[in-house]
Figure 1 (tube, rainbow, N blue to C red):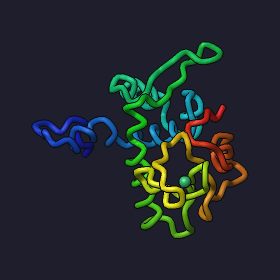
Figure 2: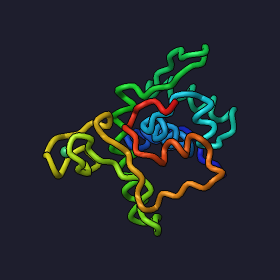
Figure 3: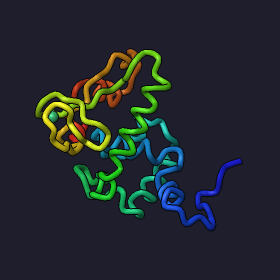
Length: 171
Ligand SMILES: [Zn+2]
């Protein structure tokens, strides 16, 4: 049985936050936005999420102020993380680290390094090499040993399997 989206009577901040990003696809959309996806068609191709569900989730995240929506080329909307959305990076990074530790037998698929020095910042952005606090825009995503892209991979997956700065538009 699906859980109701709203945890009625819960005043805990975690419960409140999960109402916004705890739904199955929401955090993956946020993750992809950090990876540089902006267009509906790109989220759709990469996540293989039903269009109606993607439409609903994007609307919801825009309504919550996690994503901003702006007109892009060709009269298509683009979705970009707001400052509030960017604050979710430690959540995304920590979940990826936890997943790497427990569910990545072939090794990490992605490694996030400080563009300035090549160090690997911790989830809060602390760089062990230069000591700076590194924001996502100053990080580069590079493929790890667990990265494998099959010949039938969609173009977005291929683009995301190559080294690229976080938040830089994929297309
Ligand atoms: Zn550094």
